[in-house]
Amino acid sequence: MTRDLRICFIGDSFVQGVGDPEYLGWVGRVLQRTPGEVTAFNLGIRRETSEDVLRRCRPEILPRTKPDADNRLVISFGSNDMVEEDGALRVDPARCLENLAAVLDESRRLAVSALVVGPPPVVDAGEDHLSRTRELAGEMASLCLRGDVPFIAVTEELARDSTWTTEATANDGAHPRAGGYRRMADLVLAGHWHEWLALP
Amino acid sequence: MTRDLRICFIGDSFVQGVGDPEYLGWVGRVLQRTPGEVTAFNLGIRRETSEDVLRRCRPEILPRTKPDADNRLVISFGSNDMVEEDGALRVDPARCLENLAAVLDESRRLAVSALVVGPPPVVDAGEDHLSRTRELAGEMASLCLRGDVPFIAVTEELARDSTWTTEATANDGAHPRAGGYRRMADLVLAGHWHEWLALP
Image 1 (cartoon, each protein chain N blue to C red):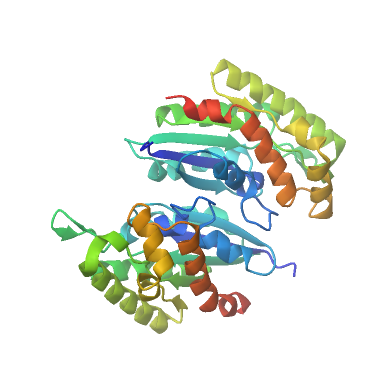
Image 2: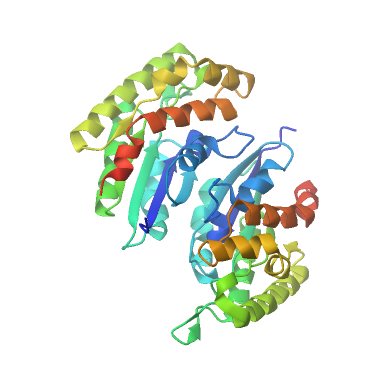
């Protein structure tokens, strides 16, 4: 029970918990329901794509790990990559997958055990965005499987979740309130969360 | 009400909220009681001194600000500087004040409005540590006054607060649980918090 567990959560606005009036997001809610004490770092930044996350991954994780601690990294991005701007995707799916592979390589170099959470849907971005995000999530899952990294799917589940979609629609079209983040935390906790943390 | 308010909180384990089973710390509790929506970034890292914070201040704040947003920075460190290790202070008080001045200079260069929260007491570090921290806090307050930066004192108040001291003692000797962080949030909210946010 004296294990020094340190978890960095890196990604976009959903990681950050934008829109949650309780300022917990799914990350805070997952931590509250994780047994034992966790030293947690929320490195979510709104609007960021996989490119942005890759760039700051190493410099931001380094000061938050300790050689003798159980250092972990949770990665979640992709929804912003799949957004169309000026007639092109912000980041191409193939490139987004390369970036994910690069972040996972970095975590191996830093001896930090990684877990990936899929990209949440952006409710007001339309059907095409949802199809692209869904497909990207499937490819992320395959990539993680090949690399023996746990992947937790949330895209489809949240797109069909009435709490998530209702709250996001009533808010800014993308970010839910407390209820939606609670649902996302449920998915993460019901995924490989506890098994992953139990791994040495 | 459409102001894009972004606040970075940079500092040590107290900023991070270490020990709080609700994973809010004083930062989360202050945000919950701040009207309107805030995009908040918690950049606390346990064990860090003013030296460490100064080093990562610019690179970590840059990607979290936006030119058209109302960008803010809350700084809190010093308790770790005043800890004696191998017969010497981790960071000398004069040096700690230079570091604070340098962080404030950086915030001006980045056009980010700053506020400083004083260093909380470390209950099990003894009377000498408390005197040094108390004195440091006083010098921080003067430095802030000269620079027209709001400063919120918490050292003395928390050292005399039975919730803070009881929880910290029962925990790891330094970090309280939810109750102590609630007390610290009360002090911040009763300080210059709302006036500072109301400033253009």
